[in-house]
Length: 351
Image (cartoon, rainbow, N blue to C red):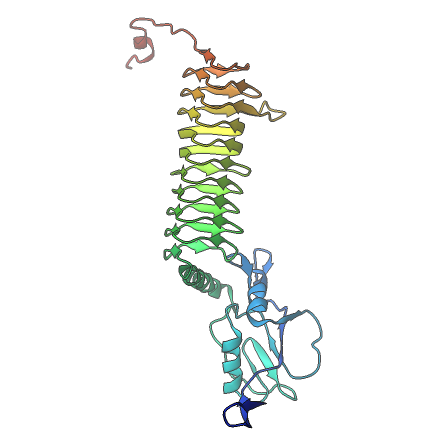
């Protein structure tokens, strides 16, 4: 018990009052209850932070991996990742003297004795881990709701992510690591955002973004894949089954479906048709291609790196480009068709 002496300005005197405070040092002992895929139990991840880190932050505890110091103390094993100082103090007030419990012990002027039980739900086996993951998701969703962010049940958002008001994270979506999601973004069902930045008013639908950046008012997906070092500008459209890798994609440009854009510089207001492939690898080295502002790349074209397509150029559908184009060039590279009337019968003859 701690006593304070306070002067009363109205009564011109002093009075005593007491506050029940727990002042003992809290220690976290690195003990593992099980291993899972090469990780100790206290190393398991709970939405961006491992269990030991969460307990250290919540309790202001000291981590110790050896002999404990003498004196009054609370000793905990890393099994209660969501334990707070308030809950711990309540538990200590309700249990006088020195005692042990499942997950730790308390020493008050002597050795621990007796057994009390658990503080709350903890991680004592792998079977407890899914429940703690669900709890982490719920607690983070509640924290984000106070900032004007809606995280639907079944979504997972990293504790490390920075998410701004008006954003919706739909069921099944996962936001992993140090992401930044600006205002009024929609993260659609089953999307996975990894260490990425998404600008205001953008929409990500059933897509995967990894270490990439998306501008404002841009729509990604469904089923798009932005691999590391992809940068998509403002007012862009990356449609279904489009893959970007190590690519800068300029403001107002579009690739609606079924394209691979790898190791590329794409300017502003470029249209990339269906089935376009930026062929960046010759079997030994990877090279980069550049498409300048205002170009039209027709369906089923192949750009064999390294090539540059000058501003305002037009690449006709079905063309394979192997050399640079100047500004406003028109390029067509198809073979003329050979038609043999009735020749299909030879190939489709019935047995």
